[in-house]
Image (cartoon, rainbow over all chains, first blue to last red):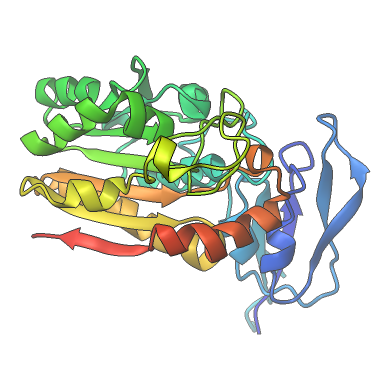
Length: 76
Length: 247
């Protein structure tokens, strides 16, 4: 199975939580910190179930999410 | 272990952070337009016309040529640009206050002339930038700052369905209404806008894409509630789907 992780740009995120509702693996949660615009940005849980499906990034209005796919090294 | 970025901010967006409120549909539509311009490889051959309204700052966010038109006049400015630069991708991006109210004459005549343009119409059922006043598209009974008791049919008439109205013109080739509430609908919206752009590039003619967009700040709702409001209430009056497609 594909593995992945996401990087949330804390300054761009406005904490609308559309990604939290979208994530099928519940890998994103409302964070506890506030950015310089006063928004409580979302945080990546990193429970290891992210499969880089990109749904969170597609729905993110503010382009705050970068999705990274992690692939195992091919057998040598 | 190898890492590969599979989704990132499109190159056709600048690094500037969107000035829109949390959960605003404008940001999503800006993003998908920028992604499409990247996909089509048209960044140096695109001219957008921004409206008056929240999206007035679109030129700050899009990393391609964008001009600004007087309130409601974006379709005629786009007409002029397209006639001078027929090889360019020219589109106007307008809100409901801009397009359905002050710009009603311009959009109707542009559609009737069948200009080879793409019009992206953002419908959030109020005047967002000025504080949420009633727009021609405001739903019956919807409370706004200028209809505190809710929109009243006797006094204000019915909400105007721009897509259905424009679809009646023979010169209009493609009309679709989409929404941007979840990932699936964003992908559909992107497809519709792409079709609008391709129609223009292969000379099919006038394309009109209406996007039902959330305005959480002026609806006095949290973004997730605003999303549910579009799915449950707004898309009942403004049904989402293909309205007209002539090849």
